[in-house]
Length: 242
Image 1 (tube, helix red, strand yellow):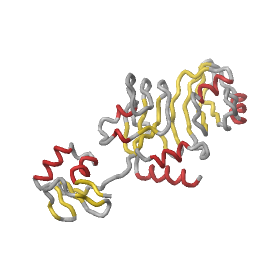
Image 2: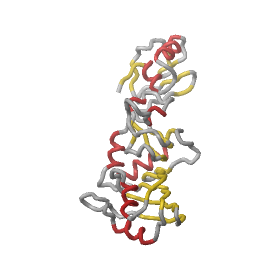
Image 3: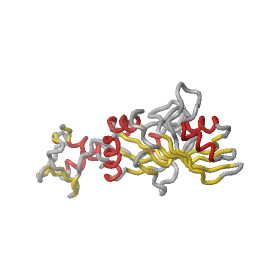
Image 4: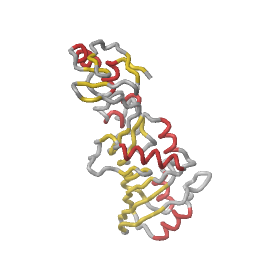
């Protein structure tokens, strides 16, 4: 793969194309130890070694971001009327190439993986792989062990087939109950429909985990960060095993 030097640096977030061209012409960039002052110079990835201001710059083909999605934002790449999750990634270069892995309802918050790695996204979302998704749910109504039995057996939510078995952990039971629910699918409004099926109403929903990836609780709603390499490796390893 070959890229122009100015695009290479801009893609890695080191400035706009105009800004990095200026730095290149001022001699701030070396390629394989040689100062290069021509922005149009083609860089071979990953063979060439690029330094900017004395620091190495490694080109990343794929990017992976964890977003703590807030309520009121849609899980889409673009929308004419609504604010989207990509609108929250203000500091991400080339964000127009990124997309959310799966969807969270507009009124649901929590963990959302955003990437440009289509292969990983496909593996995470494939119905054949049954990747666990853990939600914190606040419910109007008294959640019981019987509800847990129902969910564990598969729940009729009005589709052609019942849901896959799900795990319910009751944290607090009363007029307003709080639970952790682990599901292995991503059907339309699935969690809400499961509780409707047992006579309850979801009043708050937050995704905490998807596969091996767990929401970083230091992220406030609307904040994001890059995944660590360990987090990326764990996701890739998990999905390739299945």
